[in-house]
Image (tube, rainbow, N blue to C red; front, side, top):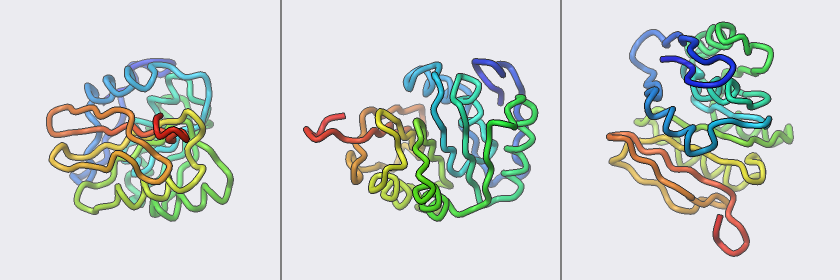
Length: 189
């Protein structure tokens, strides 16, 4: 696993020890970033269920201003920190050990708005819809921002969740990523 493009291109990332983390494959990550815009001009990124931090660090490497990483696992967050140091982007990250729902509520109170929100929860814990519901009922996602929700292809997510509307669905074998943006008053995106 590595950073694919940008200022930290080619940096190898540490994996989280054990089998409880399922990192996004490089080929899936590369395709995702081609769709959401290969490079960014600032903006904040939220990497919920961060694991290795691969998605948030990739966004930073490609021009995002700052990334917030949330995970409940101390081992995962230690790995995110090591990867942020390896990429030279440690000064542009915030790392918190919290439940994703509680973290979203705290970030909402703080008034932070994100250009990109990555969701890749453990598949067996049924956390995707509750977290998307919090995001869809708040102003956590910036105008023209994107939520990338990764889940098993055998599952499905609603097209609309609160203010969020699915704009695109990408399938890579047994992995699917639904992209959501804030719905407009006409119901489009």
